[in-house]
Length: 612
Ligand code: F6R
Image (cartoon, rainbow, N blue to C red; front, side, top):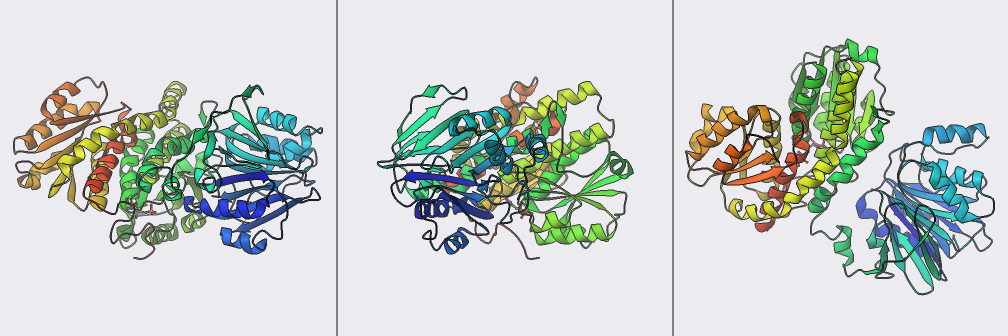
């Protein structure tokens, strides 16, 4: 995701900022920029669309930007394309303030309208530029007061670095739901959104907490609470190597990305739920459009296809529109029954998967309206779709998708509830209750991560297996497929998913003494059926790990039969996969780790499959 750095001291700021931005490149970004206050107290600004290398070039490795105080940013586009104009920092109309921002300003539209009415002009499509203009608008000679005034008016999540040309040497750092770490030095101080950008300069750091802001000068760092009251600095010592710090201290990107899922799911959902309503600002389909759709087709590849299979249950349940889920690599050659009465939902983390693009084009040519649910902003699929809902998962580095998948589920659930409301299938009371359930999903994902230790222990039983079976019914059968894929792609152990009722129609003979079976049983209505499938495989010698919701009445019988029982947060059946997938991801991870596999880059696989 985006990276922020700020430096103030006696040394030249530009080289330190450029180096800090390079250190944060691994996080993924699509444009970069920096602002440095010149010795004449002028705001110097350089921005590029593309790599930090372009910023080095543009500023002659920083030499063209003299000055000892500045900020820098790498941007992963959300509001607006990854152009130079949209890159951060954003400077206020008269060059007084420069702002770099990670996160989203949720109420930027009314704030922007207010500023436009006052005659402010905007250079970018970003939410962030509003903050720079607001600072200038309320500035009366007191930098700190202006920052406090603006903070009291904005809503959303943010990490900010703020410069004021009138107050050279001072930078304000602000944190709310987006990390900022202050680095303490001698004769300088700096801060960044990622500890990797600090460790070259200092190992004494302060992890800012939500709602805090800091005034950073070369010889002091003052921390304040939201109400302006001063706070003590809690200094920590960082002993991480730079390489370890890039992975947030985790051994692998996959683990880091699994652990990021609560925040990622929150980012996908919470900015789109406002005042108890789902508001899809970035969505262009009207009620009339919905009414003309007689069916929905979801197309995708791999895990995204499995997310589609799980999403089908939510859409059909809430909207009562038939949903057909098709592999993109098949759909493109299937001569499909698609016309202008079809809504095609295309799911893709990368937005660049060739088969998915081909299926999209094929269906579009037949008249379908296309909604893309994509993570990477401005990727190829977003340009072809009629409407785009971003998953806002942030960059995913590990080849095996984790937060990419859970955020796809989150957006599909959101879409299902939104469409049902538009179609009049949910009354006000039902709608309010489902919204509350959606709002609880990030916390459910966080709680599901608590299974990490259990899954790490369980991996001991799986690491020497030849074959593993994953079973489930309805949404759990879709989840079983995702669980099996994750397991085989990184551990290289053969795994197969079966709709629980299907095993006896063929492959049950493969269950032998000691065969590990993972039975996902999240649906309260199907508990008894799941239990009989567990008994069936146990009778043939399977060692069963059951995944069941916490406190589900009737689940004691499953606990009694299963050899291992993993508890996940209880959710409505059609939302259950988003939490229940977490132990399956963790099981795959720990098994692969015990087998010494290359977890982040499994053999023969690429992160983005741009070939057929
Ligand atoms: C599996 C995995 C792949 C992708 C698939 C589609 O862990 O990551 O199966 O889900 O290649 O990729 P996107 O979503 O980028 O279209």
